[in-house]
Image 1 (tube, rainbow, N blue to C red):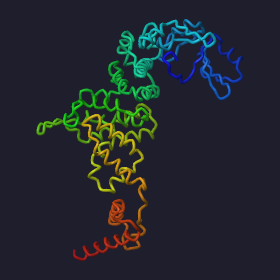
Image 2 (cartoon, rainbow, N blue to C red):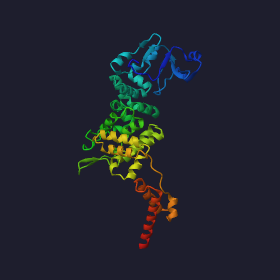
Image 3 (cartoon, rainbow, N blue to C red):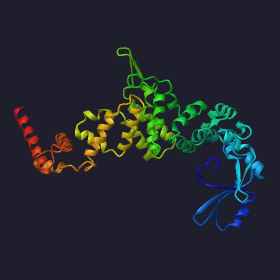
Image 4 (spheres, helix red, strand yellow):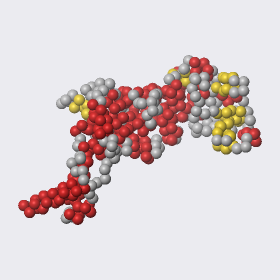
Length: 416
């Protein structure tokens, strides 16, 4: 509210203990009663209500060993960052600040409350949250807070993959995705969470195609250009599309170029390992890996047969792949001729966006005299290709072509 932004939710803190909250409201849910947290349900609305508390030592970097109910001052001091330690009294319409959060909001600073190392040792995920807040708000991380993150960055590995994934999903959403990855790098968290991305730093590319610089810089440029409404499939496809380059990079003295043969294949395998490690849903892994695997295919669109082009455009992920291609071009050589060509073809195919059903099947060819086996499969493939190239438009034309194939086959066998 102080930043003139609409809150996503309201968290309520009170001196009422959980049992008292249960007495006061007809419907409550004890989601974390042992920690003093309840959900109060009123109609269709839910409110998280927490009793003011102080906490004892944290031994697992996540949960306190004990919870002691206390006062608002100590409750504020146990929170993560000063900008998150503010209370608002809705009756008196007063901001209550025990930790200097208002000043840090004004000076655009993310600062841990009290000793940064103590705050991070209470929950190691707070290090990643500091980076996310700084990226989202375009704030700076206060120096001692930043130093504590760099010193303890290795401890982020003790946090569950699911919690890390959820923070990364927020961190890498536009328009602050590029700053997010830069802050991750500077904090020391990138090499711990996504070492494969860190390997792209300094992986040089040929200046002819990539005047912007190394693979990491190229990826950074793509993240900067993400549409503001980009979903995380596109975001992660952009982030990982060149992740295979460091593994396959080869310098050629002959043409004085750096080559990355089959980096798309290698990248798809690496991307799949990363996404599985972060516990992404399988359907999302499949989509992102597909985009990474085929992101180089689009460069050949102008040379493709109509059938090949239509098959490519029929992929469920193709719209994301095309946007990925656009970002890739704009973040390197800047040419969009292939993108424009594909967009034009999409318009041409708009009346028939899906691949048409085959004109004939195996049973049809068997009736003509084909025998089950390779020759039958080859004939079906040829007929299908000619159909998708608009050379065969009717079932009758397809059957006639099949008869010619069969006649040619018989003639060749007779001559032999």
